[in-house]
Image (cartoon, rainbow, N blue to C red; front, side, top):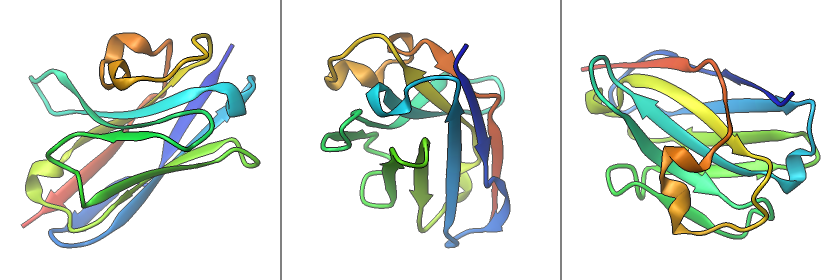
Length: 128
């Protein structure tokens, strides 16, 4: 029922900045806690960032803290991931995820198991 579509990925050079977008439809986006995860070939899906439905609370993985910023525009039903100072190690498929059911938001949202819906992912490749 809930559809998530990521966009904004591509091939960029190290040090560049890219902003990913995740458009959410067929649901009440303003009530959803949202997250970004990334996955490299042959590896587990790793947490990147999460934001509460009211956009007042955020969590970040240590590897991206200070470089990435998660934000949302509830009027546009869109969550963003601004990525600055990109490194080759940031190369991955980035996934947007939504929890439309749990009204609470906590540090537990660094876990992929907390989310019910996922986008198809968008590839970000950072060259050195």
